[in-house]
Image (cartoon, rainbow, N blue to C red; front, side):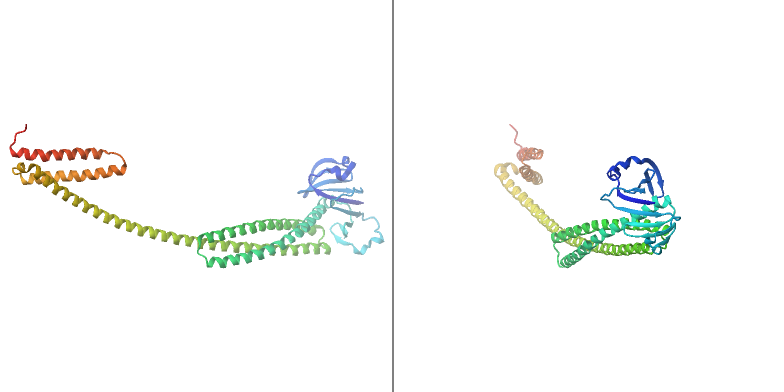
Length: 385
């Protein structure tokens, strides 16, 4: 009996592979270990494992396609083995004897559905998948090694540059470049690591089947060991790239710390300058306040003096009878109201409008001016008209 296996991605039209034989298969929903059986016929099945589907057909010649195909020829134990096949090249496996060649596997055993419809397709698919992924990731590993050299050289240059630079814009540019380098390398590392995990998963499943059915088959064990060795190298590259990513992150953190230190130092200098400027402003304000006080005193004395002289000039005859203390109080009130009035006028000019204070002080000045006339008149004995 002969069984042919054809493997293809899920979603492909079965009629492209089986042709008119697709009508022989009836849909079924079964599960055989790791394989989901989608359809059965009198001579085989359509199975699915993960994203891969396969057709296993016994004693039927399937059409040639562009998909992967393997052929298994089964010899019943009761049938005499042809001398041409070379009985001595067969090796023991769990169900009988087996011989591997490139695309054909010869076995001497009774038909076992668990093996031929589940265990063998699982082993075959995962072994092929691991081989393909390892080959692809080895190409990526070479690219990553070259990328790592470029990154290491550039990060070393930037590290040396940072030590001699105190420019914030310059350091910010370095931070931006290092962040870009880290993000790009980390993205490639994650994708590379994910593929390594997929390889490990496939190898583990293939090795599980090998331990159950092919524990003494040297060629299988050597093939699996070879793939494990290649995966170990990929793991080494993964570890090296991971260390490089961490190194870039460490340099990036150091540059950020240096940038923060410089910013804090400049901020402290600005604060110090502002503090000094504030102290100078306080000193200026003190001096200004002193000058303003002196100006007020000078203004008060000047107004007091000229008011007294003007009062004596116009009402000198009447002032003789006015008590000196009352004259002093009257002049002081008038002078103070005039000084306060000038301040109110100055404030109104600053605000650009007349304020209530201007009207109040105007009335106060007029009342004080009226007092200058009424008090001497009251003490002179002159009757009012």
